[in-house]
Amino acid sequence: MSFDERIGGVLVAPRRTFARLVGGEARASDVAWLLVLRLVAGELDRFAHTVAVMREFGVGAAAQEVLAVSSAVLPDVVGILAAGMMLQLFCKAKHAFDVAAYAWIPYLAVQLVAALAFTALRLAPSPRAQSLVQVAGLAWAVAAWVVALVEARNVPEQKVTT
Amino acid sequence: MSGKWAGRALLAMLALLFALRVVQLKGKGLLHVATPRGSQAPEVAGPLLSGDRFRLADERGHAVALVFWAPWCGPCRAELPGVERVWKRLQSSGHAAHIVAVDTEGNADTAREAQARLGLTMPIVLDDGSASAAYQVTMIPQTVIVDGAGKVAALIRGEASEDELMRAIERVERP
Image (tube, rainbow over all chains, first blue to last red; front, side):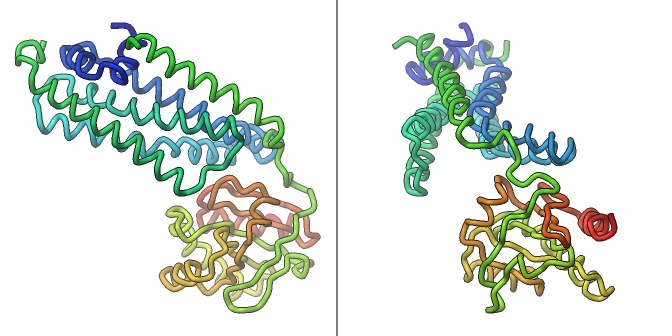
């Protein structure tokens, strides 16, 4: 499977895709790349401001800003780690940790659609709208994680560990 | 839709979001700092938790450190006890410099709760959003040090240690 197929398959054909990911086609770098892209696209204004801060107040101030901006993906990273540990707990699949990370992709997709809509309409999302987006994304991610778990437990032992 | 196309759609959405943000950057003025060093510090005015009123314009003649924070912000809660100790050191050593904590949330109840929990006695001013906007506070905690002439002299983004804050204030007082 190509990169496109691996990340897109989780959204439109989760059972088939997770079965193949569990079978050894998962790549830890896929989700890492998506996290970086999400950070750059989502927090571009704050990164741009960091450049202005660096010009005016020096590298130290800019470094603090970069750390603060990067912390925007911290909840995502914690969620991915937790999902990985849980999957590892429930099944002994060799790539369980990498596979679990793919369950974050539906959450990213919901966040992206919402961010695009709000950005295009130049609207500031209300706290209620933000909560709705969070819940929808999390619900889809949890559903994907359950599919990953089912597929990981279904795969024969020798196929999983090779 | 096949997985391949769904994946491409996801990447296209990321690219589109990036492009939209680039377009919007132009109008936001984020590519320059609103309060560069040496510029006139925008006015900060608002009610103090103690009941009085604070006006930055009344503080000419000595340095003022404006510490932007919010009660819900973890790094702010970690920083403020140290800021409080610096404030007490300034008071006891006869420094003219002042420290004012600017609550960006502007909610007296939550500010009072945080004040009690953290044992703060330094002045806390409630911001209605105008000071945060004028100083372009995109992250907290953030400390802006204004000199005696009312000009922006230093900026500390993120959590400042006691030593860092004290040194910055002393540098502004004795340039």
